[in-house]
Image (tube, rainbow, N blue to C red):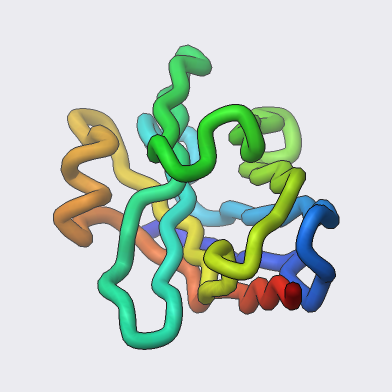
Length: 124
């Protein structure tokens, strides 16, 4: 079992920045892939950014150049640095993790372990 808890959400004006954190506990040594996902009002959940245990990353086109995903394995923590925020970034942001054999695509299918989410609101 892996337990995930997000933090760092809040309200910010357009152009501002936030850094989300995701603390993992449990069988963290078995985690292979982690990612950030979001679901805006009236929208389907979408992938934002992902990272594997070797540090290879992937980003949604809508956040490339603005968001940066990173991980601190010593602290079992995943981060999402969000800069140049836009109103359309408003959403509940979720952290997810999958074990060996997992991937960006397995998380996109909703597999793995998920946190309860943290709300990000960007005003214009």
